[in-house]
Each structure stands twice: as structure tokens, then as C-alpha cells.
Image (tube, rainbow, N blue to C red; front, side):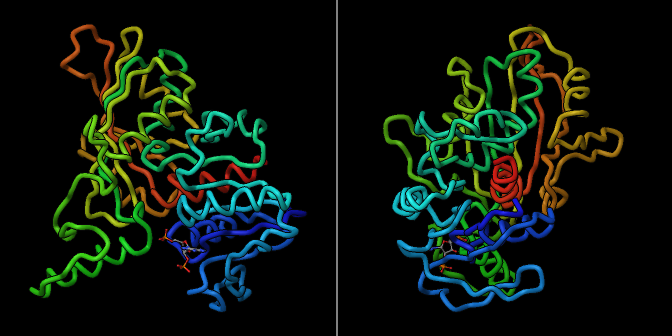
Length: 334
Ligand code: A2P
């Protein structure tokens, strides 16, 4: 990427800051880096490789000369500015949900469907964070013994709701411990020492919230298998930045936990954490700040007498593999 001019849209946000961090920590050579945010942040300074970069306000001319634009400023901004960036000649890697279900736009997890990157017409969508966390460890199994049915329960961190929700978790926890009342500002519910159904809109016809619908739709699109049955329950938990997922999947043929363990041991992007003797399994605290999906608790689903179902528990850093790292990996492949 050493000849590339890169722009980050939403550079001051929870994911935007990690875009910068991933570019730094992966030592990606760039020609230039432009940091874009709202008028509120314009003029602020942000460090990049020891240099102070000035945040610029996003506008219609921001993409002149830009080769790759990484977006994470919400769907509305992506819908408005991604076409402008493409027109200016940039390739957009978009972390929002704006384009994910568009059949003409690739939805990419490099460990699964990197080959789809070349089909882009200027935009590549980065999947939902809970979907990435679920699918990276499931893909190696699906390739050897197709998953016919998948039931997912998530334990999602504050970071998925952006920097403001992370701050709400910290402030409400501090207030709770100080015996003070805290009026929630970002979500409608008390967050400290609590959990709640994912704070996205409920579809009144099905009862599923938007996050659950995203996981279901994106799993089918990324695996290119509309026949795979998927159900999800998405829950927000008081964890700062790593999502965990409990999943049970039913395969086409009988499958042993030992087969799944052997597959996950060598799966790209997965780290096995499955220490039965010490009751040590994936935890958000271990997943935070590193790039792999931690996978463990690999066991037979005892409710399926046919022997085709397995339960596992996984955890991954929502801001890294769930968002910024996945997008930066896509940019590297571009
Ligand atoms: P700003 O900090 O200037 O508001 P998060 O996902 O953590 O909530 O971050 C959202 C990101 O999107 C921030 O960088 C935020 O910038 C940016 N953003 C929000 N609204 C706009 C806008 N109208 N134009 C450009 N960037 C925006």
C-alpha cells in the first residue's frame, strides 16, 4: 500500500481510532493518511507514527486524490459520502450496515471469502461484528461438513454502540459504585451491573431486533448459502470491547467435538482456548486488544440424538476483528 493515499471517515470514533492503530501496528506503508470527522472535531490533533495529524471536517471534496477510504461514521454518512468517494476514484471499505445486504456489493471476511473482493464496484462492506465473530470459527467446519442449522446467542460489548456507549458504561459503573444515580443518555436502560436485549429496533412482525436480523442475513450472504437455517438472540452486556457468542450448530452429517477441535486448531484467525482441566475458556478480557477469535467449550449438543450438533463458545475484540482489523485486512488485500 506504499503508493496509496488513505482516508479514514469517523477517525475520532471508537472504530476510527482502531483503524489508525491497526495501520500502525501492522506497519502498513502508506503514501498519506487523512483523518476525517464532523465539524465538532475539525482542527483537533491525532498522533500517527509520531506525527500529529489534524482532523479535517468531512465534505464533498474530502476524497480528491484518495485511493482507499475506510468508513466508520454510521450508515447515514456512508450512504451520503461513499458514492462521492467512489466518484472521486477511491475504493471504500465501509464498516456500516448501509450496503451489506446489497447483492452487488461484496461482504467480506478475509478468512472466508477474500475472493469476493475483486467483484467490487468501488465499495466493499465490512460485516456486522457479531456476524464476523460467529462465522470465522464456523467456516472451517462448514467447509468439511456443511452447517444446516445455527443458533446463536451473543454477549455484546459497549464498543459496538460507539465511543459514547463505552463512556456510558464507565460513567454509570462509577456512579453505581459511588452510590449515585446515573441517568442513562445513550441507551434507555441502566447499563452498570445489568444486561439488556440489543438496543436496535424490533421488527414488529417477527420480534427480532435489527442486530439479530443482520447476523442471520449476513451469515447466509457470507457463506453463500441461503438454505442454512439461522436464529439469533443478541444481548448487550457490561463489557467494554469484546463480544462473546455461544452457538450451537447442526451439520449435514454426524460430527465429533474432536474433529471440530482439530479444525479450529489450524483455522486462520482462530485461537483455541479450550482448557477443560482448568475451566479456562474464551473470555472478553483475553480477547480484548488482540486480533484472533478465541474459540473453546467445544462439546456435543446433547439434545441432538443424531450426533450432528456441536456447541461452542467464542470471543473476539469487537473493535479489532469485529470492525477495524477486518476492514484493514480487506484494504491490504486490495
Ligand atoms: P465526531 O467525533 O466529530 O462526532 P462512534 O462510532 O464512536 O460513535 O464514532 C462516530 C464517528 O463518526 C466519529 O468519528 C464522529 O466524529 C463521526 N461522525 C459523526 N457524525 C459525522 C458527520 N456528520 N460527519 C463526519 N463524521 C461524523
